[in-house]
Amino acid sequence: GDAYGGELEGTDELLKKLTEEKKPLKQMKGINEFLKKLTEEENKKQKPITNENRKEFEKKLQLAKQGNAEAQKEVGIMYKRGLGTLRDGKKALEWLDLSTRNGNSEAPYIISYIFRNGVGEILKSNEEANRWLKLSAEMGYAIAQSVIGGRYFTGDDGFIKNYVLAHMWKNIAIANGKSSDNVMLTVLERLMT
Image (cartoon, rainbow, N blue to C red; front, top):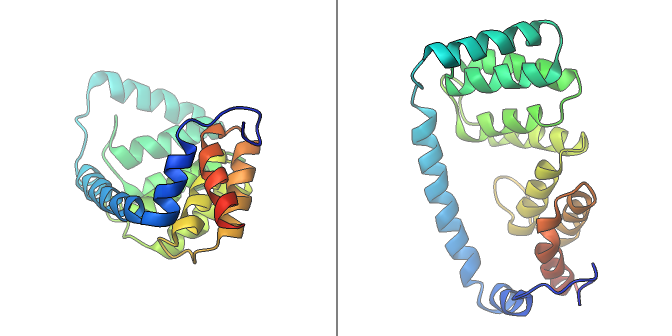
């Protein structure tokens, strides 16, 4: 069994591949590059504005103007994607920033995504992306905590490879409900011993 009381199927094979071959990490980088290019293409497209998504946008906007942090995040996403409204990166950032200031921990994660990939007129900036990613993690968003752990593990996107920090962030993510990080935690524990 593992430290969490269960069996992690395939862990030994995964550990062997990751620690000896290093091949899967290179393959993952290739997959990540492909996904980044796909995301960049998707970010260039304006979604069709329909009566249905226009009404949804207007409904969310009313709630957002009343101070609802979740609605503010949703309006930001709708501006980012061009759903129910014209795509506008600056307005997306304004609404997501307001949602963040009102305590929504997912909103800075989305801002991080905007800066990591560039959306509309918003240019890519790893430095800004990482700043917002760290804020999201510090606010308790488990996915951001997991992503930071992964970046410290690989040393990608402006993070310096550090297994101790990777382990710490993965542990925090697990404590906040990101149980799928258990295998990565086991890998890190083996690498650190």
